[in-house]
Image (cartoon, rainbow, N blue to C red; front, side):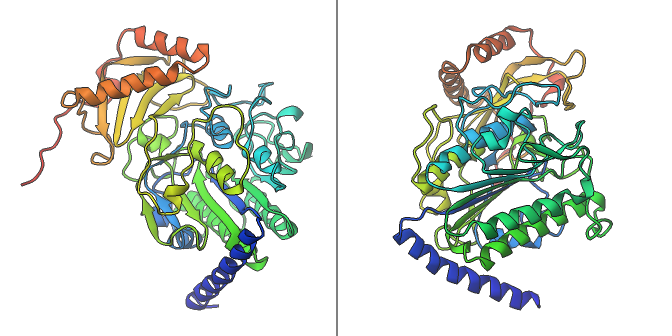
Length: 465
């Protein structure tokens, strides 16, 4: 099939799906939700984000939907970012402030409500396929957190043991890395095909491009960009398979598809023009791609520059599904006005950037205020000896819209903005657990960090005449 005919078939299927969506809405059926979540994918890794690796299926998804330029994870590392995504709350509120390891006996607390648990009250069929990383003991696994079925690995693929699980049973003691993406895809497609007659929620958190990297024989060695390119191209293929299943089953027109990443790139991959990488609260560590697709409801080919967070997914999906939101106060907001194109941006409270239990930055509108930073910027899952979070000699303020790589500290010229954000930080932290409030106070009381570990303060560039 040619590219042109393939595209025509795709558009035709979407048109039919829109009609089906209208019928579903009239009958009161809530929309299906597919949430695809990459692991360590950089802001600049996709073709539609300006990256060199071919990602035709994701590029098409963006062309037929909306792409965000200021979408942020709630944390720059794995477990906390997933806790925030699934609960709509800061990971420092829900007891998952750091990466979980196989030796850990804890996980996402039962007191928290996940997207899946929320949607189950509306009759959704639910499945998690891929990396969980929110606790591996039975009471913490997906099947206890609102998912009817689970297939995947409970940790990152660099942790041992690397179990492959179906529900609560280990089906492989050491998961074969080369087979993960195709097996995830097969299970996801099977779930979509079997979910007829009920709305469904598919959560597909991929294992890759987290290291160690591996691709199936079909993709291994095929990319011009080495194994990293192989992995990204296979994940793009997987997305295409999921979209094909939605079209084939007639579900496409009444399905919200979201594609994002848990944090910025680690050893490989590109943060685009953003500064920093995984494990850092510079924008390159926390700002991630978001592609949103829903024919007839999300305008096609649109860029959204409004500020949004992974924590916004739960309240947004809950509103669309007509579900009752969790009892615990949410930190995310309903961003449907952004997704529907009815508003270019939304008024919202400042977003707090935590690394582990340490608050380091806060984002409000186009402004980002850095308050503290580690004395060692190299990320390691096990903190390096002597690594410490220290206050900056003076808070650093960046206009991350005009200064995308956070190079020019404009705090001296904007004292009112600095004071405004600091005030918002203090008010927000007042509702956080005591440990977080205490840690913040201790961090701010330490001797200031050497300015060499942070940004070099330079005068802001003068506007050209």
